[in-house]
Each structure stands twice: as C-alpha cells, then as structure tokens.
Length: 325
Image 1 (spheres, rainbow, N blue to C red):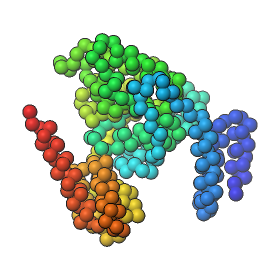
Image 2: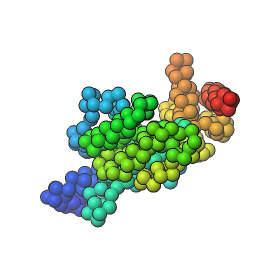
Image 3: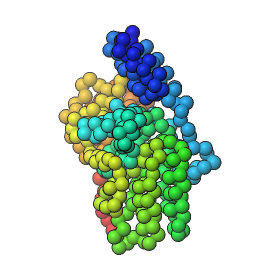
Image 4: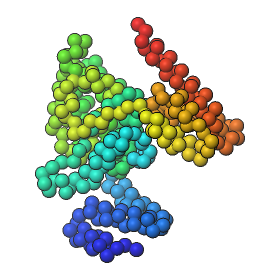
C-alpha cells in the first residue's frame, strides 16, 4: 500500500503535468512494495512504467542511415556490469541526471550526455553503451565506422552531419566504437588532410549538438586522440582489467546456477588475472556449454581453469603476433 506522502506526491505530479516526478514516485512505490515482500506487485508496477516509456521511443526508419547505423534493442542493465565502484557511481549519476533533466534545466543546467569511454578491449565499454540505453529506455544506435570513413573528400564529414541530424530527430544512445578512427591527433605526421577535416567537422558537430540523445564514444587508444576531443565530453570514464574481487564476481554472475559450491576462486583468479571481463565471461559460457553437452550440473574448478588457460594462451599469442614487424 502506498504511503500518504507518496499519494500526495502522485497527485501533485499529475496536476503539474510533471511526468518524470510521477514516474519517480511510482518507482518509489514499487520499491516500497518489494521491501514488504510483495515482489509480484513491484514487478507489475515496474512493467507498467517500462511499457509507458517504450511507447514514447522512436526508432530510425530502415530507409534512413541503414548502412551507417546499426540498431540494437538494449537488454542489459547496470547490475550486469562488474567494474570499479567509481565507474558505477558515475554511470548512476549520468542516469539520474537524465531522468531529472527538467529539474536541472530550471536552473540553466544540462544533464551529462556526451560520454567518452577509455580502456583496453573487453573491459566493458560496449556493454556500458548498452546499459545506458537500457537504463534510459532508449534505442541503441551503433555507428558503423567502417561504413562511415571513406577515402572520398568530404564524404565522411557529410555522413557525420547526417548522423548528428538524426540525433536531433530520433532520440537514442549513439555509440561511436573505435572512436580514434575519426578523432586522431591533428599533429600526427601520418595523418592525411581529409581526416583532419573530418575531425574538425566532428568537433563542430558535437560542440553545437543540443539534442536529447546521448553520445557515447569508446577508444582503446586514448594517446591517439586529439587533445581538443577531451574538452568536448561531459564525462570521461577509464576502464581497466578486472581486480581479483571483480574476477570473482564476474565468474559468479556468469556461471549462475551452473556454479559449483566448491569452486577454488584462488586458482581461477590466478588464471584470469591477465584477461578482460569479456574474456572471462566467454570462458564461463564455454564451460557451461560443455556441462550441458556432457550432462553435468555444475562447472568444476578444473574445467574452468583449463578454458581460462586456453583463452590466455590465445590472447598471449595475439600479443606476440602484433609485436612482430
């Protein structure tokens, strides 16, 4: 049962046509029901809110930018990301500011919506983009960089302009992966004039952009980015390989009901130290597939250890290959 304060807050939000306050209060009521053990009621309330939010979403028609933008229906939520607590807090801040942006606007302030993610491959950058889209109930649009960048003068900048025009018309989370492809340092001697023009265009577009969409860019090579890029983003998040505590949590989350209670985390953590979150997750899924095919109920330490070793050897082999001329 809703509290008297919650009922009054609902009435006030409805009469003032404050949609976000109304939704916030309803979600507080759902949390209140969950604390009382009425989980089915709490889930029903949250589902109703999700359905209402889904109705307000607009997906880019297939005929427009279909060769440049890949639409993804986000399924992940913040609780699936195992990362540094500081990153989680900053993501929560981005989400909170989005849902309360009207309150910020009344004071002449804007919510964070231009985010740069930096870190090694597989540390959660792409997952973060999907999580933001999922938490904000927005579609996720992945910019296909191989289709965006062309050798023809002026074409890449023209495509960029189209994408930024779409951001204003179709609200969503727009994800630029391998961002250094268009944001390389302009002082780089190997850079060509066309890519400098592309970078200048991007800097202008992101500076002028005042849409309601989120712009998320990710790079594995921050040292390659032009220094002017960093000033254009509201937030920069740095990702690292998981800590021992995070490795343990990734394994627990990934194995789920297939986790053996006698797993030696000390052994597995030692094997997984040099691997990213994505690699550890893949290893756990491989172990689960073997269990299913061999009619085993749980993943043993020996099985997961062997798979982690395999993935580490493959990764080490790739590093050796990349180091050769």
